[in-house]
Image (cartoon, rainbow, N blue to C red; front, side, top):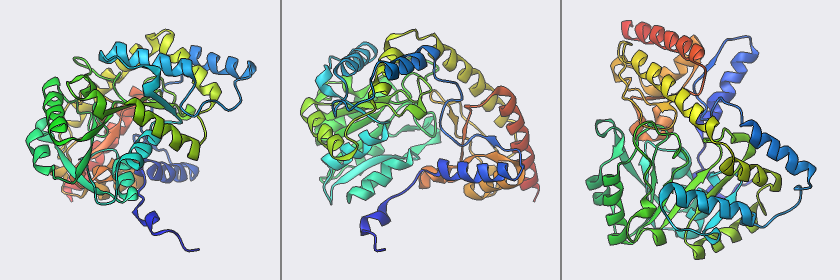
Length: 390
């Protein structure tokens, strides 16, 4: 079989590869603690599940509009306006099966071959994969620990060329947990307006923030017409398997993204969209409880990791990951991550899974019980001590 050459430019998401390896070890009887996969370990709230079940029984099992059901789109617009201080309408919203299609569709719709697109490094690996696949030039923007894993606005400015058309920002961020400040976003917005950049603001972790409040770049002058907000239900409502995400963007662009929906998956599952309405309009106590639990786990992870020889860890301000510095161990990130899995039964991700700037780091998800996290930390401590001793 001869594949199209573009397939050689398509990347992957290492978390799923490590999950497969971990499952294979478990099938052999090994005890593995999972810190690799980026999904909440909580169940979908009961009221949301009930809404999905009711939707099936009420016949929401047929095709729906490509851009999403009108009442869900309106509910999303109202939620975004309430949480960000914007004034979007349903016409600005496109509902998709998960958040990734928004990344894919926007990159396909806006980037030509030869265009430059700036993305965070370390950052979610699908950013680069989709830019490469579209034939544009992927320009990594280093995200540095010394800035608490926030981008350097001056460094961003230095990367902008006449060919730059597209910028991706992610706050709170995967894999670092970094959060951009109001001042950061104001400066980024100024650059976007000055250089006529379109911004994809990945805000999928917007509700999982521990101090302060979430800010969106779409609220700054000149940005509503050049911003797409990516958000969804997977993280906030523990609905990863439901596959329900959305983008909020200028109406003319939403129409084009809807065309891409027609040409790809037709529509998002109707019954799932009914559950989405309940998630946004129903009680929010389960979300608050989940974030509170994540905060406790974050504190456990940071305190314990900083006691391990060769490892230091900054406190993430959002999401549910820590990104510890392991340079003191004296082993490349991937090699140490492989050792953790193969010899110590801890599934973790090398920082290089998220870009070249991730060398010297691990990504550890604390979407697991406190008991399992404590066990994993003991194993990481043992692995680090053995490695440093060698």
